[in-house]
Amino acid sequence: MRLQHATWPEVEAYLQREKGIIVPIGSTEQHGPNGLVGTDAICPEAIAWALGERHGVLVGPTQAIGMAQHHLAFPGSLTLRPSTLIAVLRDTIVSLARHGFTHVFFLNGHGGNIATVNAAFAEVQAERSLQGQSGELELALFNWFAGRRGRELAESLYGDAEGSHATASEVSLSWFARPEAVKQVPMSPQVAPTGSAQCDADEFRRRFPDGRMGSDPSLASIEHGARFLEAGVEDAWEAYRAFVGASR
Image (cartoon, rainbow, N blue to C red; front, side, top):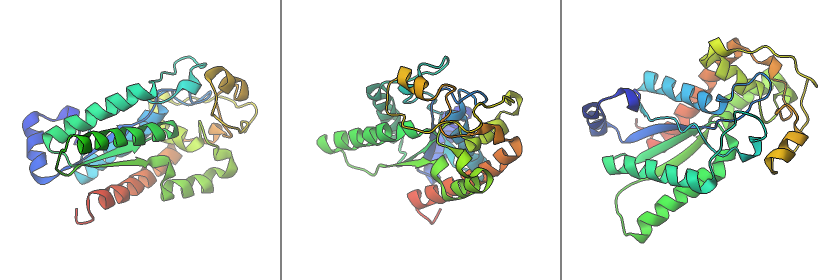
């Protein structure tokens, strides 16, 4: 069940029986020679949509632009400032809370979002405390790429060639979700260099000329993507059920 495809009476009826919602969040940034610019949003969105279809949980619109300043030397990358993303997330959460949602579960596809999302949570809770607002409001962030099943699958398929950006696992999942966009591109070197992404955009491109970090995404496949979807759905559903209460 997707919020954008529901009518307001349907959302109102949903809130009579459920108070939780999943909001996919990612980024719009380069993912190496064969990875889609939308990878970090496509992956959590695919998992969230599968959860909605299988378990009836409502899925909100994907926040597709995140924290990606260090990718701006690669055409197509977009970023928000930390303060902008905090404001967007704050208004999203407050809007949902206004309608009666008490558990907002952000399903994340981009490591660079983590600090800012947590800062947004702190802003929302501080504002509620300072204004003396009562009522339950629980917020959670789950990173699909850090789930146990997904990590174990990536290790078994790719070993050290998984890397940390433009990875074979995320490329595989994005290809499964968007098979019409598969790209077959040779990698040189086969496995990209490793290093820190804590730098500005120009320095990032000097360190990682084709955008990859320690990865070989030529190992990606649609078949692998189907397996990562299943692993991601199981990991995320386990986390969501623990968040809203195991009785669900």
